[in-house]
Image (cartoon, rainbow, N blue to C red; front, side, top):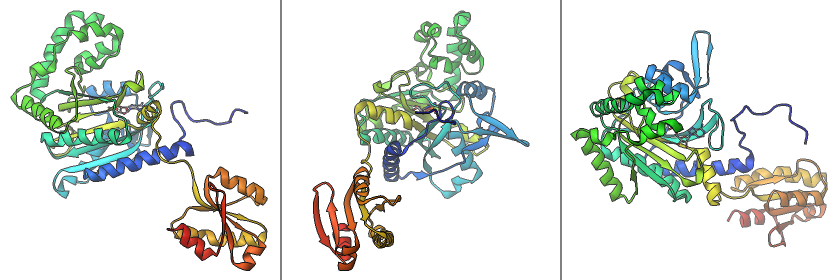
Length: 419
Ligand code: AMP
């Protein structure tokens, strides 16, 4: 086939109809579960102010490694959102959502953008679903968030996942740990990778996330944050673990699972899958009690997670999980002659009003070609109409799978098919 004149950008992917059916199925499932968890949907713009996403120097190193797409227009700096926690918090503050009362329990599904080097499971435009609870510091909120995340994968049939869990404590605990970590790394600073050297001052915790070969020996022997948690943090962590055990949600503690930003607190978690290869994270999240204030709101504890839709689809593929039904249509009207075609066009709305999906030929093809097309469209029934049928008011209804035909009036057909 000739090469198309235009194509998508690198790392940006079209979701064609056969694939889109799977997305619809997943999105419906996520929405249904969200409803059960009493989560409300929030939709924010694709673009945000750069200043919201890049808030400080610590951020800058992290964001630069996430490589945001940004541009300016007039005096405004735009970024394509790389994630949704900050935008959701922005909306929470901007619209005084706390005034709605109670905790705000939110979920979202939508596209995110990161100018990363594309590979399997890593795109430049990808999609996340996620949830955020704002206004509660109770471990119940952490566990409900985790339970919602885990439930989605369970419902879909992805069961071979591992939930990794850690606590990074409150700022006091973390500052003590940061110091210990830096002391540990200091003698070998020169041997660390360039990225880790850059993170040493502003974001030392992120060194623990490093995949660079040369960092591994120093990460392996690093002190663990759990040894630095103060009493409050330990209590919070213990309660999260107890609730998870009560809910039969298995987890593995990973003391090196950390989040770099200063606004993260307490619970950190990640859901990984052996079916994903090197990009093995299905989802990740945690508590961020300091972010709302950082974004200009009143101090508000919060917890949330984000999950990759594409990685979810890859895992389904690997496990042979079929998502949703094949393409199909209830009724395909097959016509012979102009009068019959006119009749067909006029009957489509009635079929649809009766709750059926209905279509017909758009190309003025022969009856034989129309029957073939009805097959291709995976039609359950062909409603065949020609001059005789119109005269008699009886039409041929062919069950395509059983190859059975009945002669019925249009009312009888409506009655039969809408049951
Ligand atoms: P993060 O916001 O980095 O914590 O990512 C949360 C989840 O989003 C990850 O666990 C992945 O499943 C997914 N994800 C992150 N970045 C990408 C990407 N570039 N392409 C596809 N999925 C991604």
